[in-house]
Image (tube, rainbow, N blue to C red; front, side, top):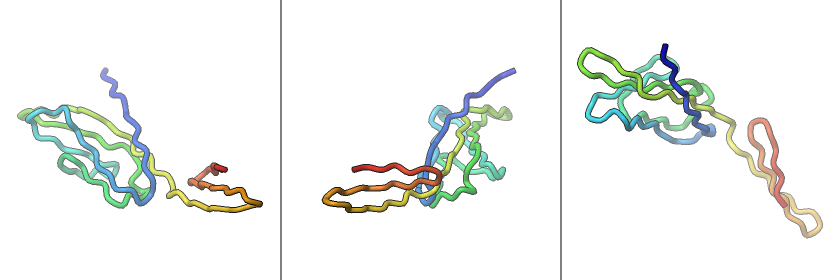
Length: 105
């Protein structure tokens, strides 16, 4: 039995990123998305949405043999919302993520 470590990738809704499978050498690389779609390397991920969350697998082909290289779990959180408040000569910056608030002053 073989276990593959899944690497976590954290992004926000609306971000643009790509996944690169770099250890394949001269072989043909293919990505499999959470929906089962196939794509070449690097895998572009424009305007990320929560529906893009899930496991992305990277494979390469050596003749008739398929080798698994990497697995990434794409964690998509809500877009940051900023609110600036001034109270008695003090400024507060409130950062709201999907499930939390952080206050800076």
